[in-house]
Image (cartoon, rainbow, N blue to C red; front, side, top):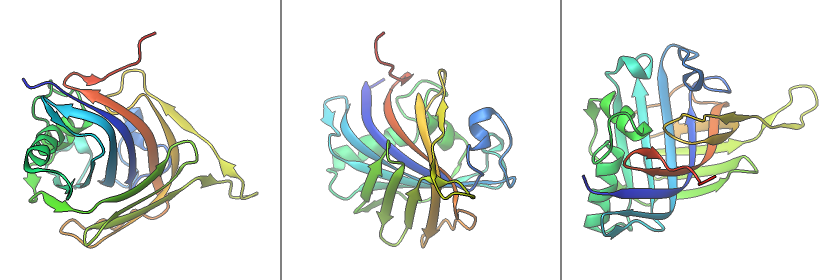
Length: 213
């Protein structure tokens, strides 16, 4: 197994209500799951291949809960990536060189046998975890805008977090409201003012790499 590590940020938007039932071992709000996500890699490597400064993105869609499988997915790799970097990122994001069920990428790939060709495109991201604002743009594929949840009475920003001590994606995520529009081969039709998460990610072959106490 080739050693790898990625440390950066993610912004994801799915079609469920704020909180995302998946995070609580519950069924999706509308019975199905569809999501768009992007990652900013501050530091990373796959063996001796540096992944510093690159971005990746993905679109996922399942006809039911993720764990029932039969989903479809498409990865997008930063057009700035070299062939070696692209191969490394595609391997990681399809669960390669990863312990079974150790990361969300392993699980999503295993549950999405219908894989569309990986794209090499410019990926524009702006992810402010503390501010709970963000934007993803992948030309011809999808656009995501995310903002803080607003109190329906006062309009004030509402802050909520999800803490997963034994998660496989992040330790703590800030929750916001996201909207995604799609143009690619996987249409997302329900992602309007739905769950968005902003999180720091630090992952490797065995899953989350947690800071030393």
